[in-house]
Amino acid sequence: MTTKRLYRSILLLLTAGAVCTAVAAAPQNTEQTTLSADRLTYDTRTGVITAEGGVRMEQGTGHIEGAHASYNTKTQEGTIEGAVRAQRDDMQLSCDRLLAAGQEHWQASGSVRMVKADRTFTGSLVDYYPTQDDHILASSGGTITSTDGILSADHLEGWLKQSRFTGLGNAHLMCPARDLEGGGDRMDYYGNDPKPYVVLDGNAWVFQGNNMARSNHMTVYLAEDGTAMTE
Image (cartoon, rainbow, N blue to C red):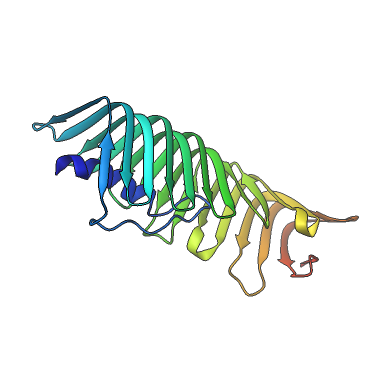
């Protein structure tokens, strides 16, 4: 029973959502689960379970691999580290270390790469909060890539269900399909609006084709025909 709690808790967090890559819903408890490792220990006094060497946990359509995993049954915190690789349905994650703090917060660190459908997040650190509209926070910066473009900044966060993203510090946007490039000190992207748009603040600039615009505050509406209108 305690062993199941280890891999179930970690996989639940993996499959709850992801960066710029919304992850599939968490699996039900009825899904078959398996765990393999070179060594497995459980300390009844501390409530800590550890798995060492060739760790692989599977549940339903998801699996995760790493060199070392631990789970505290009392605090419901778990970690897996060492060339971490995870996949569930069309979500893929790779990082050096994954921390699960209950089922409402997890953190991936070290060469993070998350892919879901046509969206990819890359960065050194990302926090994910599935119950807050799939909120992602990359406090040390990162890059979001999709078929619509590439957004990067020194501080990056977003709400995946709202398709809303904010970049602070050296915010930069590239939309090859629209031949559009822009940037500023701050960038707010609103993708779910009937007329998607980007708000640029602080040393804002936009370049499209042979046209250049600069302002301290600028709103760019992204038209379906590939043109951009600023105000």
